[in-house]
Length: 554
Image (spheres, rainbow, N blue to C red):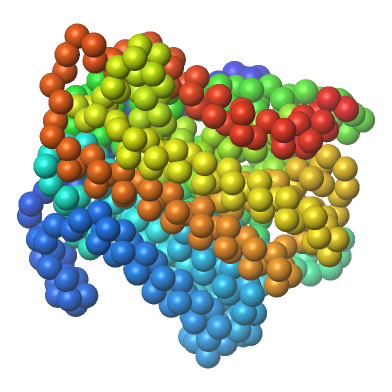
């Protein structure tokens, strides 16, 4: 079978698996977010934390709960790394340096999983299991509960309550993420992914030297790494490492896992608001961008300009032979369109236009389908903007799902879509203006600039993937990217929850003859156009200086 047909069949199998998961998983998520019954283990956890699981919270209290929980999580994970050398299963590794500990703690709590270290030579098994993997569960759950609060803003009327953060968080972890992770960890073990508590093994290399590679609880971390759109690898090579991703089947399964929850959330949205057509419209926009990105990235990587690509008949540099072009491009597209950041190939070795497309995917706001929760709430905010623009065209007060969009709601939506680009562009500009920070660039010209732009885009959008060629282990880079990750994660949440509270206080507006239908093909096209225009106007100058300049030059 030709590589082209093999890649197409793999993509079609993935689409079929996601389609089969859409309804049952989406309905189950809706049940979790709307159920009035607590499981026994959930009641026990509520008592341990000291919260009332039945008490509804205002949007401001919900937000304070999110921020307080995340702050404590950062402090805990930072201390865990700093004390690593005193812990069981440390493998003899010293304490993680302060700058790296801060950056990593922020990274995993914000669902970014940016890694400025080599996992197999820095973190012991206990820190990986009880520190990093735990945050993989919790940070993913935080994204889902925030979108749950926003959906309640659309469904509730004349109230200032949007749910209970502690109840939502507990349910998502206990009822969804834990059981799914256990099942798929077993599947990954059966596929050949490593799962043990072994110390390092020494292996001979082809050059006659030796290499020390530790085993570890890899499969259990790999399952939630993808399922929660986290992306942090147990090993430095991430999902390109054969211990994490041993064969084409495990590679396909990992792509499925990083997409499945985010693809199912539009069904949850439709179920909770009582109109599945709205969920299908959102899913259609997400699918449109995902298919376009996958097809274009595959096309760009099949191009073979240059001596080495011509010899291989494709841009095979930085790719695993066991995956090839199609599987590598599909993985790269899916991971940059979500907030996953896992990689099975070196993104810095993508062609200029292929790397530029991966960068553009993140600049979209990772909404196709995006991270767990964050993709859907980003798309809903853009839907609000789209309805507002349509209202301006016809001179009518815009309405979305029975709620009027006044100046207050539009301020929150505007602040949401402006925050991340401002963080990315200011951060990149500051880094490029300092001679000492430019020294971290191993490449100059357009490609060097793209590496810096990619780093700040990845951090601000909580993706975590990276281009090589940029040394980010200094105190400045660890601190700067850590702050970017914090602002990029929590400032948008502030505006999303404020929007949820504002919508929940409104009285519903009946649908009239002048109401814009938000479930048809016209709206899907309008929403897609707004997404492209917002990203294009914001980022095009930066893209022109980086990947576009490099691609046109070649």
